[in-house]
Amino acid sequence: MDAPSAPRSKPSASSSAVSPARCEAFAILIELEKGSAHADDLLRSPRVSKLSPQDRNLATTLVLGALRWQIQLDSLIRPLLTKPNARLDPQVQIALRLGAFQLLHLDRVPAHAAIGESVALAKLAGHKFASGMVNAVLRKLAALPKPQSIPESIVNPQQLAEATAHPIWLVERWTQIYGPEAAKAICIQGQQQPELAIRLEYPEAEAQLAEEGIQLASGAILTAARRVLSGDITATQAFKTGKIRIQEEGSQLIAELGGDVTLLPKRILDCCAAPGGKTLILAERNPQAQVTACELSPARFEALKARVASSLWASQIEVRQGDAAQLPASAHHDLVLADVPCSGTGTLGRNPEIRHRLKPEDLARHHDRQCAILRGALRAGTARVIYSTCSLEPEENSTVVAEVLAEAPDWRQISVSKVMDELHEGLLTPQSVSSLQNAIAPDGSLTLLPGCFGPGVQTDGFFVAILEKHL
Image (tube, rainbow, N blue to C red; front, side, top):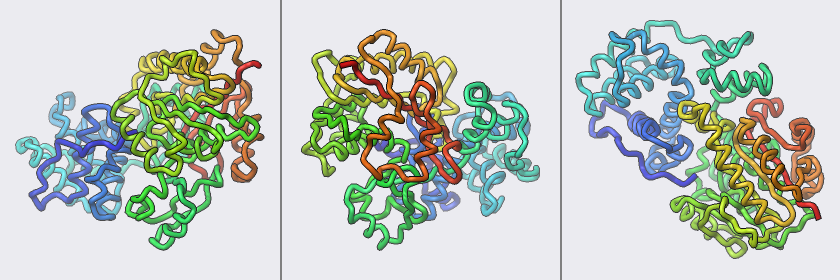
């Protein structure tokens, strides 16, 4: 995703009654309420980066917490309104959610601060008369018992949905597809702060990070990845100068699958390349290849160009603007990555707003677009195509692959296990190999489920299938 513009609709910060962290959290939540922005991106905006480390941490906690628990918060707020079915102005509703989240889920925030600053936010946003209602509702809420932690024994999807503040239709789907235990693990991880993983663009960056007080651990899946245990990675010189990049380990793994040492592609195409992390890994792992990075969105295209230009592999990568679904049959590439736009249900811990936007009927729309892109990838490919999403939904994953393969008799699906065996030795961490093998389905595809990878290991949800052309 591109770095977003600074959030609009921010209340005036001239009043000392509201902390900078709460002002920024309020502005970001309003921006998310409006449209298609993502929390993960807005929390990396320049305005948030200028906050003190303490305020930045609090703003992040408030935004992600209010989004993760929004369904629960709304269900507790509504009965306390004089007219429970009344339509609230979005700014008033967000002020209530922010206050409610702090009262119910943050032990170190005094009740008077949570209530008083939420009231002040409503006033600063121009809702002076509604501020009294915000005050009254939050005071009533503060007197109620705090919600219990997620219970060990959950007997049905309805209980799981209520306990973890997920839409019931998603929980029912996951229970049916993956089973109750996996569904529970997915939902629980969706309520937790994801691990922060990085990729080192320059080897010396690791020592620089240590000098700046960043504590790192080895990657859980990949030896080239590092997990951030403590410290503000975005404040480091290594981050500001592009010597490292933030990239989730599952995302890195998808691109690593293009580093099969027996394939040695000469021409590689990344169909939906922005923001560019996978493109850079494809170039890094295939120094013998020329890489073409394709992106349709003008804004994302410009951000992709800038990111590639500042990387070590700029001379190896050509960035083009275009629609991958319209790729011509004359575009011959030995390896094609089709990491397609999707619902993002594998990333609800990182982008919890998705659960409030997504509707069941959206999956069919995503499916049609994904099929079109995969067809374009097969037209452009001469040897191998990697198809991937960050979705947990079969309509976007195995169903897309099966539908497109049925139309392409000269292509077949091969096992991800086979490709993993042919990667550079030492690329996968020893402890991840068996977990990855266990996550491979009978058709050869790989599905990483949040919360289900292994003890103490966090990963977003991803689906990967690898297609090979008959010679």
